[in-house]
Image 1 (spheres, rainbow, N blue to C red):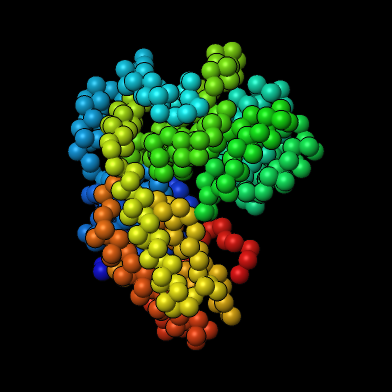
Image 2 (cartoon, rainbow, N blue to C red; image 1 turned 90 degrees about the vertical axis):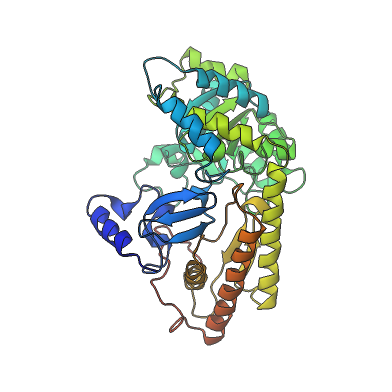
Length: 428
C-alpha cells in the first residue's frame, strides 16, 4: 500500500496542529508509522478509504460514534434536507423538539434532556446539576468522563488543572461496592458518576448497589453512557441492566457520527437549568446532527438491529479466545469487553513491553487492511464476512506474537514504527 498523500498531509499538519489530530486516539502515534493511513477520504458501510485510495475494514468506527455505518442513505438524506434549511439559526428547530421527545421515550431516566456537543460537555453538565441540587462539591467517579477539569484532574493526565479543583474529585474502584461506601462515608458527596459498563461489565447486582449507596449517603447517581448508550441497547446500560440513574450523559453513537450529546434525567434536577444552573452553548441547538440522530434512532429501533450487533460481536470475541488458546498466549493476551465492544488486552513478557506486543498485532491487522486498536467497535454494516476477515488476521497476528515471545525480541518482526501513544500505561 502507498501512503504518500497521507504522509504529505501529516507533515503539513504537524507544523500547525499538535499531533496532527484533534483526538489523541486518532493520531498517527496510535498506529505503526509507515504501515498505516493518517487521513481518511470517505466511508462506505463498515469500510473507509484513505486519501491514497486504500480501502480498510473499519473496526474503530470513529471511536464509537458510527453505530449504523458510513454513508447510510436514510441518514444522509435527512441531513441534506435539514442543511438546505439551516444548521444553527436564530431560533430553535422542529427536530430539537422531536429528538427531545424521542430520548425521553427511550432513555429510562429521561424526563427532560439538554443538548450539547461532546460527551465531556454532557458529563460536566450533569456534575454541575448534581452539585447545585445537593449543595455539595465532592464527586466520586469511575471511568473516563472527558477533558474538563473536574474529571481529568483526578487522572494521571492532570497537568494544568488547579490543585483546589483536583481535590474535589476522587476515584473509586469499579465492581467494588466496599470501596465506594468507604469514600461515601468520608466525604459529603454530590454525585457518584461511572461508566456503567467497563471491561466485562458489572457484577450481578453491582449497579443497583451503587444506586442504593449513593442515595443512602445523599448523593445523586449519574451514568456516563457516552460509550455504552446506543451501542449495547437503545436505552444503554440502564435498559440492559434495569437500573435507572438520576442523570445520564449520552453522546457518540446517537447520530451515527454527527456531533451531538445530551444530559438526561429527572425533571426536578433538570429544571434547575431554568433556575440559574448555567448549561448553555451556541451550538447545542444545531439542527443538522439532530436530524441525523432522529434518522439514526429510527434504524436502531428496527427489530433485530441489536441482535445482529451482539451476534457478530460474540462471533469475534469467541474467535479471539480460541486464537489465544491456540497459540498459548494467555500470559500476554486476554479478551476484554462485552460482544458489541470487545477485543484484546496486551501485557509485556520478558524484555518485551506491552507496546511491543501491541505493535506486532497492529502491524498484521494493517497488513490485512483492517483498522483497529485493540478493542473493536461494531456498526450495523458489519457481517459474518467481515468477522471472518477479522479473525483470519487475528490468527496471523497471534502466531507472530508467539514468535516474538519465543525469541524475546521484535527485531526482524516489526516492519514499521511501534505504536507510541501519548499517554502510556505505567505497567510493563
